[in-house]
Length: 111
Length: 115
Image (cartoon, rainbow over all chains, first blue to last red; front, side, top):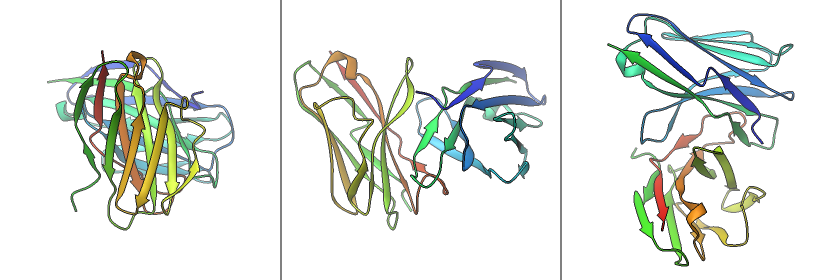
């Protein structure tokens, strides 16, 4: 079963706008990661946030984590056409080293 | 570093045939993961290895699926006999420690079509 569920399933914006994607999960986690998948390619790690962290930044990416609501958000600022991809959250439940992925948000950035 | 290497990139076979997918992890990574991705079920973990030893194969759908890792630089996922419902993209990923605390590095995937 899916631990993480992304919302929305699809998002279409104009270049330069910000894109926000959300992820909800069901059980306590050790950490949460976000990955990007371009069409026909493998997943690429973007950012990891640990359960004791609330916010993390990497370039144009900002991730927040609210463990009380069991949710996370990924914000991409000043989007570019090259950001067009599917974005997945993945949760780790602990030391068993397994990641459970959501079904992803398909982001389309129109030039 | 070449990253995770998978072969073949595309495989088309007929129902009942044996299919073998191959993976070469990043050198020095001691965890290896096999995933399957479909539109209906998303990305599912099939099995993972630590230091060539299978740790958790609870995601393997049935006995038709088997995976081996004979050494630190090579793993195979075999489907015998294959069925149309096995059609999916199969990814291999490796990690220097474990997916729970570190990044997983994905290969480009093998797109399998079973007719």
